[in-house]
Amino acid sequence: MTDILKLADEYVEYAKENLELKKEDMGFKRNRVLEILESGLDGDDIADAVYGELSLLPSEINARFGQILKENGSKAATDWFYDYCVKNHYVKKSVLDKNLRFQASNGLIVTINKAKPEFRDPETAIKGNSVEEGFCKCVICRENEGYGARGKRNLRTVSLTLCSQSWFWQYSPYGYLKEHGIIVNSSHTPMRIDRDTFLLLMDFVDKYPHYFAGCNAPLPGIGGSVLSHDHYQGGGEILPLHRAKIKRQIRDEKYPYVLAGILDWPGTVIRIKSDKRNEVAEVAERIRKAWINYDNPALGIIARDKDGGHNAVSPTVIKTVNGYEMNVILRSNITSERYPDGVFHAHPEYHSVKKESIGLIEAQGLFILPGRLEAQLAKVEECVVKGSLTEELEEFKRVFDEVKKLSDKTDVHIAMREALGNICYKILENTAVFKREKDFLEFLKSAGFDI
Image (cartoon, rainbow, N blue to C red; front, side, top):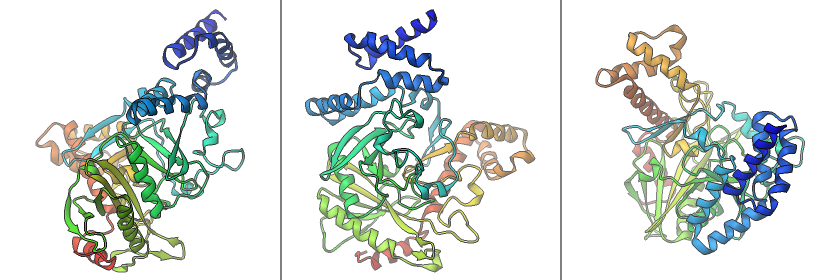
């Protein structure tokens, strides 16, 4: 009992120093923590339950966030909130910091996320991680805040008003990038993209210009893992896509002061630049409407079939000194006999590295590779040094060949990183719906743009 009392005291003292626990509440919280420690919960559950109990209430979090926002601005407010979510152990930063991360010479960022389970079943996304029983309709509904059965005891959120609508923001526990979070509709409504989406994203970066905001294509196989609940993603990092340049300008006669063009990028992306929100939204919506109805069977592009629609866009926006930069990524989840996982998905020869859907974050040049690769690729490196690939690693032959070729000029570890960067670049090329600029321009002409 002495050890439990000591541990409870340590937790409460930590909360006073880090979680804004008031001195007059320490005795009460100590008793609550003792009850949790004696409850018989498993280790991780106990920690989450304790930190959930010691964290500020949701109303207190929102009040504190709002106060900092008013007095010191949005950057200070999100800095405080992120730091709080790390200190109350909802954001597993100590785990995230152990993930391998590097920038390849082609500019892509590659990470191996050891904390995130590998997600290979797009059918789960169709259901949207819906919950058959319980008061929460899905795993990202705000009602999950504090709900132990979902591992959300220490989850905290803050309210947002975007285009006069009620939304909220929360950080991802296993974030893929700096201060990675999600912007969630307060209503449980299916994911969608239309003209309002572009305005909502721009409204978010107006309020939080130090973050980007983007939306997964609302289709299984190429979008997010929760399609049943409207939400976006954001974070405090400039991603490789944001650094890419326009290589071919296009014009919309109706909006002559909007700069738009094809991006110099392995995927299929149009960038729209202007300081006028409505004009950016109009041009983006023209692209979206044209794309969701576009057919080109010769290129494998089929807008609709018996299974429904297959074309969608994935928009992402940042705020700059010159206004908005809206990148509209064209996506398709059409499948074929040759490519049952997707014509514009990572092709089978790359599935040993990445079989999961290529969502918004990867489409912007930050690849989240499965944790299993840490051990597997170490074995491949050993094979490169020995000069031959073992039978058990045959699925990594393309990786082996790439590393072997590169290792003639550099260390095998550096060669492996370059090989992964090259493979991720080829996967992005797989996702491009137009492989030739000529075909891309033909589509844009059909959408009413001047080339």
